[in-house]
Length: 433
Ligand code: ATP
Ligand code: MG
Image 1 (cartoon, helix red, strand yellow):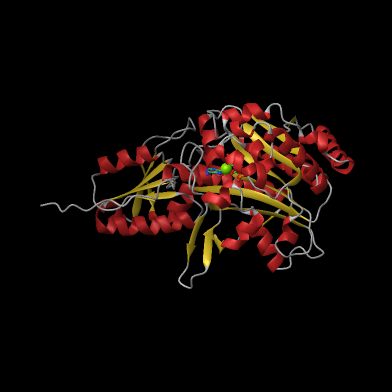
Image 2 (cartoon, rainbow, N blue to C red):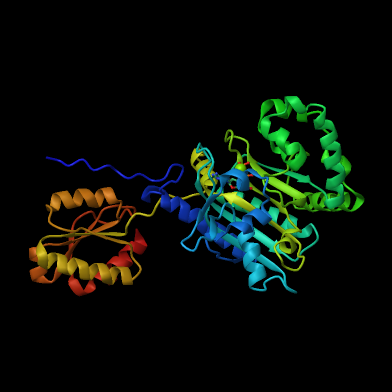
């Protein structure tokens, strides 16, 4: 009688990336890596787990992330730890701890899983992956233009279409304080109509209300004052300089005065790349300037600018577009058909030799008729089949059959080649196919 064993499933909102998908992921990650290296950015790798206080102090206690989305737990020593919900705080922590900011400038990038306890839906998961860029030590908006130019180049290389760049300026501390007061004055008149979260934030963090997705709150916000009317001359001027750089780069943008982003730490420039054809979770990449964070986490004041890009969203967007720049997974060059143990011993040896010579090889394992193995060889998409049966093993020869004929003159017939010439013959043949 079959025993009833319950099946353990992945945690809700946390996905397996299956082998049919990993090729795509690898291509996207590789393309990012190559492009970032071309722009002279270097990778940083930080732990997935950090002290909870790191995120509370940097992201802000009253953000959705810190107030209700973090995976926080006590370890065996009763220290409060958190699975990182984003990559910026860890990068700053690592930079301070390792002296990366002192009298230096850094162009950095990272990639890896992030964790947020959100309601899972399309483009929104509890474990997701970000690739991010962070720059330290540059005050001027030229670095912002460089980073935005890099994101544009990335979308072009990936062939991602229908992306729009939205930018805004939150101003410096003084501009923000003036705007904050005006916003509170306006919203207080509509207090009872605001959604619950927004009512609470009216005192604690009114700017965050601009990010509310509640439709009634959104309609009230249409009459709200604009942050852009409260920028002081310095913030105004640097926002204009950024726009001039973007225009010089030929980078189109929309100014969105309500763009504030979901984390508290930004000042001056904030931006988002939106995919206009992707429904509710349309932001693929978001970031901005966060000059206060390094000092807030105990380092020496350091200007900072960066972004995080959601890889699940990026990959889903590419998949929904048929004409992206990603290639099909590569089929093997050679499929090794073998019969019996002597045949398989030779097949395994040939596999090692061919791999050493740079070929992609798929070696049949176990018993199976020649007919059945040839079916698998065809299905694998391999260019060439090599056959080692009992006769071949005896004669120290190998059968060779071309499966995917491209060159018109090449023959479809099976040929017999001497065992010690297989690697030369196959590698030369593959060059002609
Ligand atoms: P959103 O407004 O969509 O919630 P966010 O402002 O919380 O995004 P950030 O914290 O700035 O996003 O993260 C940067 C990017 O990471 C987002 O633009 C998005 O592409 C991706 N991202 C954020 N949260 C998730 C999630 N739960 N699942 C998948 N991707 C996510
Ligand atoms: Mg969010």
